[in-house]
Length: 212
Image (tube, rainbow, N blue to C red; front, side, top):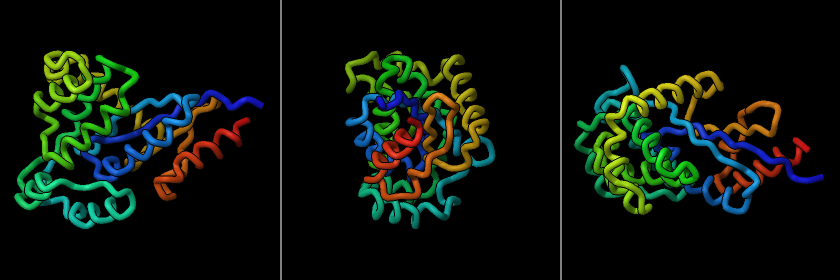
């Protein structure tokens, strides 16, 4: 029986440290699985009252070591300095708006953009509220950098970001990253995150086999 075409929903937040480590592994797993289409949705991890100086997020210094141990992701010196300073406020709304703008320029590169946004912050300490962050990513992809930068203040992309936040809630997403697989009977949350990152592909294959 043929392998079913599948849609993978990746519920993600650009300011999620676990997403920073996890996204490259997901990209690698999907390279050999072209029958799996991926959709990235932003979850809105740090919005509203959750937008606080990073020093108040006391789990981050410990969590970053766990992320590195599990995924190999390196937190750059610039980020470590930002963490030590403690004043930076992560704004997931701006990050989701910016991702929406990049995705509008090249929809098939959404997972690449997601990974590069996390890297921009957790390695280079670039603010995801800075239009130049999006301009730089767009230009590296030979896309319109001015359009990417302007998207950050575009009401259409703000609406799309809020639509994604609501959708993540409706899908039952409670933590990030979360993977949901839809093989035709509706999306269901995968257990891929409960295994080592290198086993993501195996989890996808198992779920697809069970759907045959």
